[in-house]
Image (cartoon, rainbow, N blue to C red; front, top):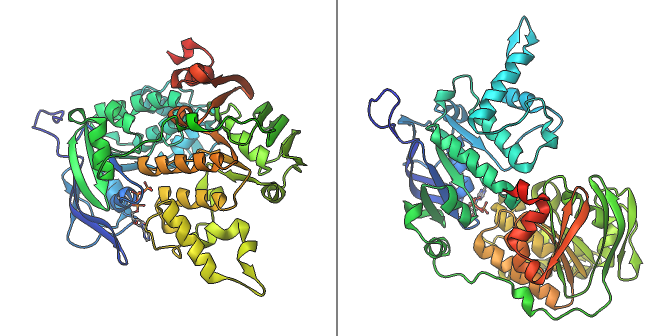
Length: 516
Ligand SMILES: Nc1ncnc2c1ncn2[C@@H]1O[C@H](COP(=O)(O)OP(=O)(O)OP(=O)(O)O)[C@@H](O)[C@H]1O
């Protein structure tokens, strides 16, 4: 991209040379050279644990890189390990946790980091409103600055976080925007909206480093693609010069068999339902009635606020319900008693793994064995060797990496590997019903296929699964039927020929007009 004053091309937004980072004996990054040009979107991909987050954290100053490498932002050297240097040179980061305050307006959220305009100590609300409106409009977001953030759709929330990142007093100083898996929990229908925002950012001259596991997005939004494997960059290429198959090969270092509609091979379930949900209501979920039989994988789709986020926690008893009944086999579950739910054979893999899914300060081994310690107990103590052996078996079964690190704190694993540990923790309980909320969120394509295989094999062995997901491809690949929630109620149940990604999206949105 050329300079506005015609004085030649803009320097690269980001240029790393020989960037390395070690944690003890683990080499998380080895000699990474990366160039993000101004005004372009550069997708960064890699399997779980390949070093993407470490790269981002090193750029932001959170990690101090190993000696020997260098980083430039807009042609200026970045001071390693100094967060203010990254900020001053114009690096902005939007993490998966957007850091927004739901109970504040859009304008207040933007001002929380960029500052409130004041006169004589009083906030100039009109100026704040105008400034926020301009920041949103530059990204093509038609939002009222006075709207509460908690009421926005997921893509709009991410849009607000991006607008805030760019809405500095001196906006021209922003050179690099790093987006860490911005679509990880967005329903498919909202992804397009966010990609339009990303393109608008690049069009304004900012370089965008876009971290994702979703291959389709690479072809939709990226100019360039780089792939990390085991901390090394294995390729940088133009996105348009690449096929999906080639990209997969770069990612996994070979071919990958993605699980697709394997659920067709599942035995038809004739048994009595193992899960019965009657007139359940909780928060935005107005009412839910359904049953699931052993051998079934049932999907749940719905936009943010449709009640999808509350359905599974309410069944499990993790959040209060206003009314309704949940039954596992013959057992009627008491509300608000996850312990009894687990005893009855119900498990929940929650969507928010860091806050609700696991104990990040405890080891992966302890997380794996926590819900079912009785089998390891021989009074007066735990059979530690057996516990370690079991943890190792689950590491192997789910391909958790680093393979031998069963005693490392869960928080030190990459996001996708944490998810595999937490999934294994519930599989180990041999549950009758698996409730899975966004089971492959933040998980790379190889691990996703593995988790799908594990779900199907648990179900083939007689369990039942309810999968709530914003990834409609996942629902269609995995489920026999998909129930769609809208405005707190099930509005459709799709199966057989009607179960397509387009149909799920149409039902979730509610009309073809809105989908267009
Ligand atoms: N603070 C830390 N202490 C020890 N090891 C770490 C730490 N942070 C990351 N690692 C290790 O560095 C490697 C790279 O991890 P990183 O989180 O960068 O991967 P990632 O590509 O972001 O994965 P994901 O897609 O799962 O988020 C992994 O082996 C991980 O266990």
